[in-house]
Amino acid sequence: MRWIAAIELLRSERRAGVLVTVVATRGHAPREAGAKMVVAADRAWGSIGGGNLEETAVARARAMLDTSAASPEQLTLGLTDKARTDHGRQCCGGEVAVLLEPLPVVPSVAIFGVGHVGLELARILTRHDLDLHLVDSRALQLADERLHCLADSEARVQVHHSPVPELALGAVPPGTHLLVMTHDHAEDFALCDAALRCRELGSIGLIGSGAKWARFRAGLLAEGHDEESIGRIRSPIGASAVVGKEPATIAVSVAAELLRLFASAPSRTDA
Image: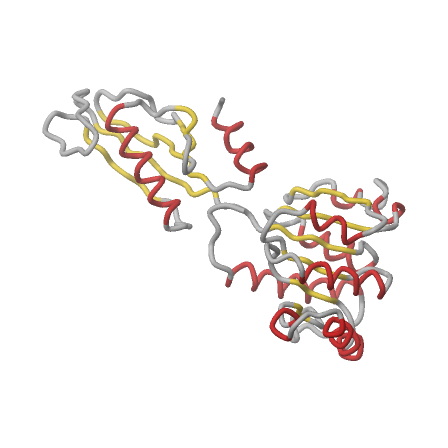
């Protein structure tokens, strides 16, 4: 499998990895500059030359995965019989510099309700490297012509038409941040109820007024959820510094709040 395909595989499986690239060589070296390999916790694809060079790079890459390192690192390795090594010797006589670049698991967001606000929010989020799930019980809200504005997105967008929206919770990966903003308060409540029963999800945000949240909170208590569980839901959603009721303004506010959540969340090496 080529390195590009390996990166795609890790992305689809929501697993972290490290891209290892030979960036410079001096003297004799087993591979030329530009040679690449991809390293995951339990597997590797490609080769930068084998032997101690490759084993050292793989070991360092996996140490980066263990600590969820976010910044690239560079290693310079001598290939002589005098170079100290943990993995045998290579006596090519040269020197190789390799760059190790983390390939983290990107955030996952699910927007339940692709109305005016939901679509505006999707337009903002698709400018970021993340997995975006769009869920709606109304097929017309997910029509190709309506979502055409997302065609050039950087995010990976998956569309779910679900007449019973809470069933789509099983289609999103663990750690997904949920945003509940459907056209129907009954759907919103059912989603909040179901989401609280899914411990593997990320944050849960509910659009609406303080009065709406007060009613929902009372209803969730009646459904048997305790205060700690209900505390997982943020409502109203959005950054308080961004004020306004226009769909685009609300979308900016919610996106800003999400980006802060991404930044403050612990790094994930897998889904």
